[in-house]
Image (cartoon, rainbow, N blue to C red; front, side):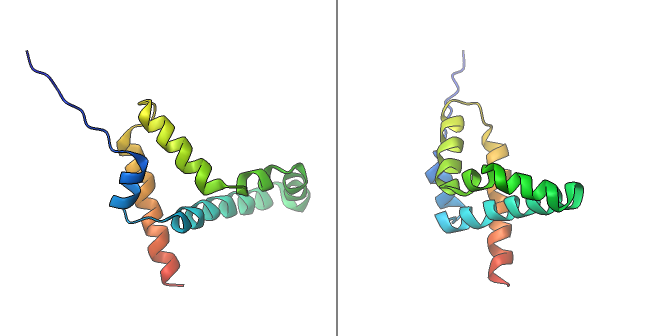
Length: 104
């Protein structure tokens, strides 16, 4: 009988591996929020965007977003709800966002 030893990395170990800091996470999340706002404006016009901003949801999304993202991904990773491969894809996108940001 074979025993498999599975070693899971923590979210902080993965962030270190990808050389991502809190500011990099915040930047990438802001890009996603910006894309959502632009999409909302294009599809629902200024009134739809105004309703979204008025609802307070955007403010809630922005408040401690990088800490909430890190905590959420760490919790989901620890409970094996989130596949490490999927998280690595997300982190790879954040690295690309970081590189593009430095080129601005």
